[in-house]
Image (cartoon, rainbow, N blue to C red):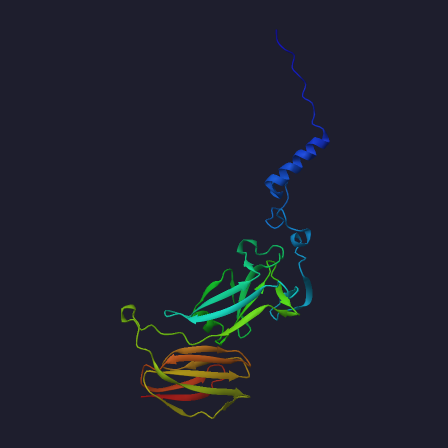
Length: 280
């Protein structure tokens, strides 16, 4: 005898809600039609999940990122070490305490002691860093107009700058001239001879000291430190060495005088002769 079909009972509203809530907890917000997030994990406070850690100040770090101030005790810390790379540029090492890099959470909420770093050269942005090591190529420094003051600053995932006492948490170091390779098998050459340094200033279209001739021995390094009161560009003829001159900033251009002759150093936009190099 065929059994009568049982009528399906509609799920009670309370049971359905409980089932949906369980699915959300297990599979995350995306399972419930919401925006998936990796920030509000079990054990994370509501304050942390909403990125309200510390106190958001109206002041910024000088590059447009607002400061997020936290107590000095337990605050993130960073130290910076820079070493010239034998092949190109510099190897930069960031040592951190009370902080860890979280590249997978960039753009999310500001969680305590998490985020990334940014590098600045004499105050100008260079790169964003997601780990303790970063190779800084010499070409990037040239594109930034040169300089020697490197700064590493810590940021939260929401791009606010971690701060203590209304000051960004950061560390600074100086860039030394990259060391040339001395391995002939790798196309290297012998270290250059001790060099010549020239400090030149351009103010209201006048060059100081007055342009003259500088004697340089072949094989020496030449370091040009030029400061202009208006934006311009620096060019060493014959060596095809160039650098941008941002207004009011000292730019250092270093090269090896490996060919003999008379070479003029000038500015392009203002067409000023800065000096002449006589390489013998």
